[in-house]
Image 1 (cartoon, helix red, strand yellow):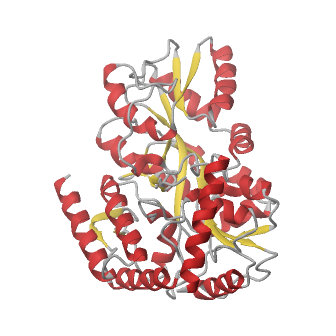
Image 2: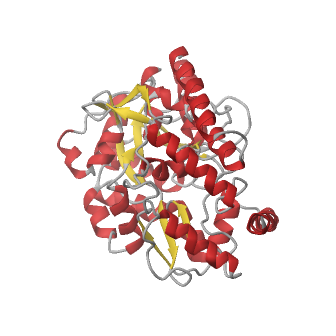
Image 3: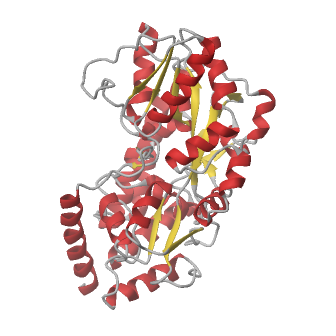
Length: 445
């Protein structure tokens, strides 16, 4: 009981710090149920799997977005807008065209393309997350993109992620996944397994040297994305896969034997207090960045804040909790051509022949510090041990499911995980009930 009260008090204190500092909301891509994956307190790093976004304008108002007056229009977020405008201006000058880059919240791009494209107010090109494809393709919102010989220039997992039912719909530019951040002062050696990591972290908390054994965000909606590597180590996935590697929406696995074992272990961790459902993105970030957590599970969006905190850390694979490898979700960002593009030939030329080059891949990496999908540039920047750590672990990962059925998973499963940690019911019942609701929602789609 003393241990649990200690962590609760720490959470409250860090929450005040995060509020005072203004906090962040995580990856600019993280939602999805993050997501969110995107994406922050979201459940995942693409904002795609969250609830449908409102329709903010490029200026942030709630008015419907109007297509810019230009020959080629690109929708992207604030991180990539400046560099894409520079590249677009060069392309426009060479081709005698005007290029406009409209800035939207990342999580608003997908749904606004679906709603605004058919009425002629959509872009020619979007920057998006691969797990949007299920919704975009089924709504007829994006056009196939033939990479041709250029396909070999990109990491296989990136091309696979931007394909749907065997057809490629995007040019990949960045690959990201969560991994383990280890504070090398507090934890000089890699842990033997997940439980050993928690035990070592809790010993530091008990000694007053840390506030969290592990900085792992949960928050109000749970966090399916960040918990996924732990789940897979118990032999449970979200969906099973077909022979061709595609996800099978009829094979939900969260309540299989491994999924139940994972749920029961979550309950034990929640009861002991080593994992706390009230730890948000901001609290987890503050704890690790301030040297008050020996470990964190997070992605490349937190590299800069952790470095700014002055923490010496390494990035490595997440240790197994259930005996099998801890396999992360891999998210891929890329450029997609709208099915409603006013200038599809120009859009394809720009994506394939301008954006799909080594020089642009390097510029985009320097802007966002995301591991590049362009293989030669990834090899080049992998001299950075942080990028190498993410890349090596991500190579073992699975693409975040891009099928529409995934949108039915985030809310119910995330809430079940949170309830399990809080002790709000029997873990097996909570996860099986969530699975039944998810199956019903998938069947009703």
